[in-house]
Length: 49
Image 1 (cartoon, rainbow, N blue to C red):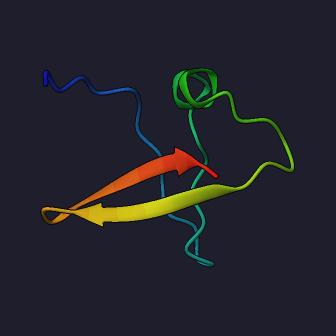
Image 2 (image 1 turned 90 degrees about the horizontal axis):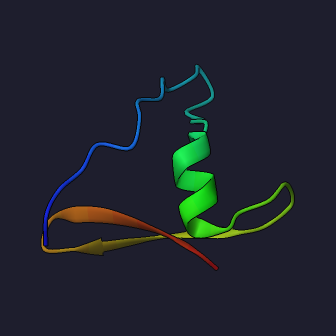
């Protein structure tokens, strides 16, 4: 699978990050939706819950 950078986000003092528009569009995420973080082979995967 080819890698592609979708954007860059900063980590806040509260360890929060903002999903870039490209990521939101690809995942179909809207305000109030939940996402899940999965670790696989040492990488973190973000998915819509």
